[in-house]
Length: 54
Image 1 (cartoon, helix red, strand yellow):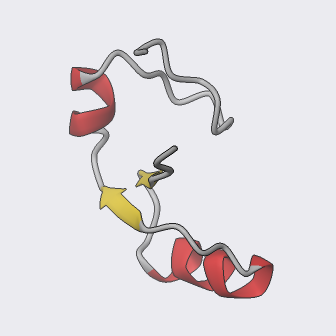
Image 2 (tube, rainbow, N blue to C red):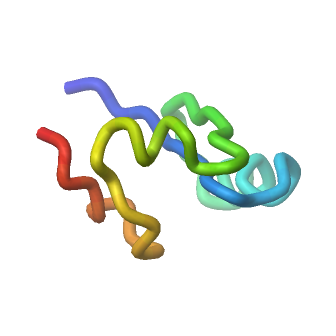
């Protein structure tokens, strides 16, 4: 299984800090305006499981 975190509409420092605090070992990318999220059918629901894409 491959896990990739995507930070949408957030400053770069906050997601990186959360990764350090909680020891998240998977990579994370920033989608500043939500363009990639929208392209893949995901919605900004505040949940890591809010993607409609499979």
